[in-house]
Amino acid sequence: MSSNTRSLDDAADHIIDTLKHFLHVDTLAVAMANGTGSRILRAFSRHEISNPNSTQITLLQNYSTLVLQHTAPLLSIPNIHDDQRTASLPITQQLEATSFIGIAVSTSDHHPVGAICAWHHEPIRFTDQQLAFLESMAAFFGYILDLENASVTDSLTGLYNRRYLSHLYQNSSDKQFSVMFIDIDDFKDVNDTFGHDFGDALLLQIAARLKQSVRKSDILVRYGGDEFVICFQHLVDNQDIDFVAKKIKDSINEPFMIEGHTISISASVGISAKHGAGSSLKELISDADQAMYGIKQNEKNL
Image 1 (cartoon, one colour):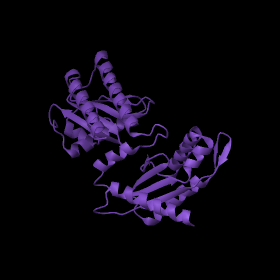
Image 2: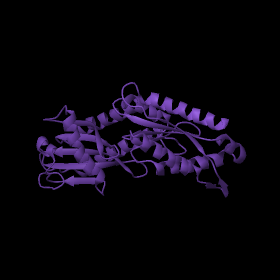
Image 3: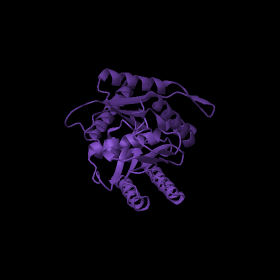
Image 4: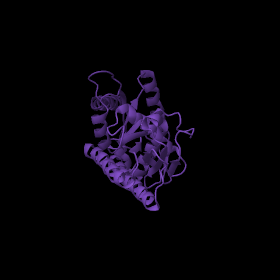
């Protein structure tokens, strides 16, 4: 995943380097959505923030989030000091800009996943050619993000895959997770009895039920054939984790209807909720896997 992360940053670098010679504005930024707002990948200014610090980048995110929330792909604000959406933003004064234009970056399913933003001390008046070029850069970045998404998502269920976990291992050392490891009991028997297409259809329904059982902020991963991992942030109370585990098990225990067949299955769930030093996400997943295996063995011995 690290190479993919570099490719995203490289793409943002190329976009900035190209646009700064073609658009002639004071400040440019390339951002991508992060679930609740946006995250600036690269920013450039000809003047006061050629090397923006973390605080300034955070402030720039307010503008890219506005683009993501806008109903049309292009957001144009002729005077950011008079517009109620931007006049009170601290970065508005720091940029000493007058006008703003932002274009949404969308994936192939037309879902906005990023933005390219431009600020200038005078009103921005792009020619048709400049505007078309900006749109081309947005389409290019959307294509790059499509490739990124394909590399870290499971082709069957659309959940994250183990490649995405490698990214989390490298970039989430400052975060505290609780982990749930889920294994579908006797899934091989389903494939042997009904065939692999039937098994794939069952996995799709299982993934859908798992999505309904967790929050949008939780990270849901298809870890293996019939194994799933859920990484929870800000779920440190053991009672809360046990509640979610019961909710998931009850959901999976509900009968599934596939190709005219009603099938009932169950799942073994292992939990690891250590916090503090020495509890990396990789270790938590390993501990949850072992806990799940222990539960499965105990159930077999009953």
